[in-house]
Length: 174
Image (tube, rainbow, N blue to C red):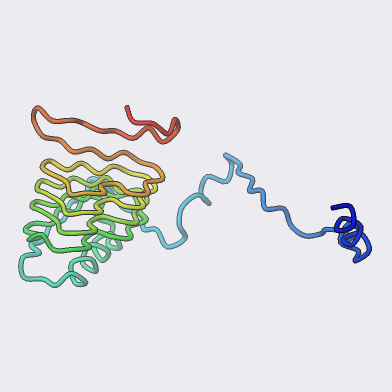
């Protein structure tokens, strides 16, 4: 072992001056405006919009949600989602989003900020990779609900059933 250690000294591996930037990130409360995504929209939570998604394709539904956010609507109601997959994904904005019906697989995944209410059921991997916000499902949820959650609250509400809330700061279920 001593020979191997001496070899690393002979090669100059211990004399190199390390330079560069620190990987530590510093936050200041005075820089609160910088905590938002640069492409986040200013929304008015009193401004409500709704649309019927029964005859729309999945990309068109997600695009319509983004267009309504861009127009300043802070409360969006999607009627008749018809258990379509991957609805409401990738929303990185504060928003109140209601789905009146069931969602398919991977609903409201990769989100950071919205408060989502789903009045029906959801398939597997709903709310996966959620960073912040809330997801409330009023009926049954499929497997891996809230997989890889990093923050926020998620729960399934049904009379007489378990209410699960993830405490992000403690890393345990309450």
